Length: 120
View 1 (cartoon, one colour):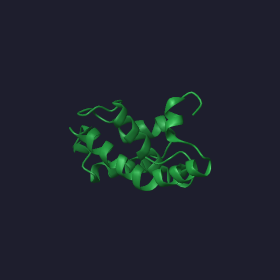
View 2 (cartoon, rainbow, N blue to C red):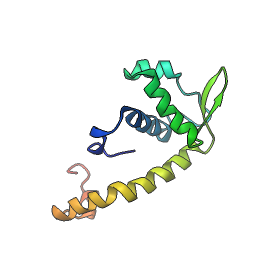
View 3 (cartoon, helix red, strand yellow):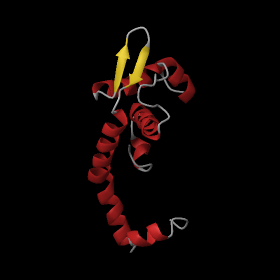
View 4 (cartoon, helix red, strand yellow):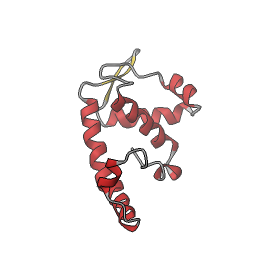
């Protein structure tokens, strides 16, 4: 999942992918659960069905969902753990260095942020 600032220039299918990934990680799409149909998800998000299909295809390519012809796409067992590991690696590689650099420029100590979450 990308940071909010990074998502501004991202293609819509990647933004939808991030939303679906968050839903899997949050348990809204539990392992074994049927994902909404492409058309239903497109309607709920105000997106083009082809764009949703492209986002869903990414999960299929990554082995995080399985397709049952005539039924739909299901979140595979272990998908949340796999996704969490991949998202952590991407965050640490792509987003964290930028966040740390900004914190250093602003003289923010991570411990202070953890001690006072309401200020952060």
